Image 1 (cartoon, rainbow, N blue to C red):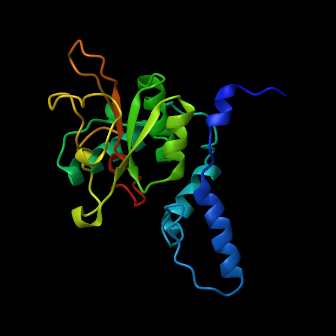
Image 2 (cartoon, one colour):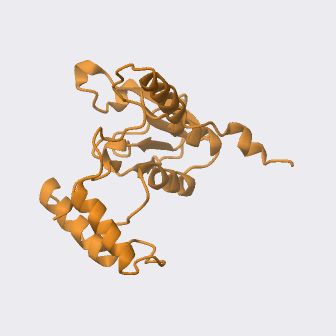
Length: 207
């Protein structure tokens, strides 16, 4: 079978490979602190498990709206508005199975081959893999302990001749992926910054 040439640029999520090795060490009696795949170190709370079982018993096993169930989106919007101090309506909420797909989808919509993408480093290996897969150029942005591991685009070094002007550069807080196209005739490349802090998953019950 002949695969598309883009498949050669697609890496793997090596965090799961580390997880397998870590669990193998645990099976040998070693105590392991898991930092590889970004999940909590406790089981899903019992009331959430029971609610999922009840939903299955009630027949909630069919396709739903593509953005997510309206009631869930309303709860998420209310939670984000209350905890972030911003006004978010349910029409601006989209429920997805994890953070990586919703980062990847805007990248597919915004990036052309050769565009530079600023991504946090260290981060999940799949971020760089997604950038390479789309034919874009990965530009790592170091997360420095002395800065509290916060974003600082000045620490990155795009290879284009000039950085975007301050009026068009992306700085936190930013959406999960933001395109920056300078309003100029100069041949600058677009810059896409991945702000993973805005793609965190709420793992608690939404009230």
